[in-house]
Picture (cartoon, rainbow, N blue to C red):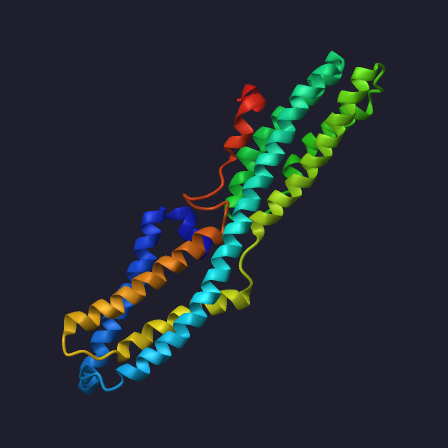
Length: 261
């Protein structure tokens, strides 16, 4: 459901659905509750409602803050992994120039195919939360084969050869990290606390009493809107490769890799 919303609706539309849904729920619930129990308008339970909302709000706020900070950190890590993988590829293109033309062309061709595979094949799958290691494995094997078939002769070639091998090993490591992070999501327990907590706090606002209907609805709607925007933030950050606000594959089209596009 999360991936469908992010990939099929714009962030603005998702915000309208999520935030608007919570606000409508709060306004309708408050109106129905006060029509069913007119005595609520007297505000006799406001002290109790204030204490309960304060306690629940504090606990929920701590949980929400922990989740948002964790997801933001994971998104930054995923962005760093993508940048490192692309940088290693670019460095391979630069360093392989020190090797003979045969190895140079083989490795560069494989790098170009790898970049296209990542952007055109793997990225759409990652947006859907799916993994495909095999898609780019052939290009990785081509690079290793080209390097393993050559024995560097000069000291200069040995230095650059060693760097190319190290960077290729790092590309493989970063590739696995990138694909793994595209599949990660909040554990079910935290999902239950985040979304379940919202469904507990919003109904509590129905008990707020005030003779002014506008004041009651403003209170309930404001709390619901704040919770809705918070859940929107969690939704967006939980899937760093999906939606409008996501990590893009532009790093594989820039710098030394731009020649392959």
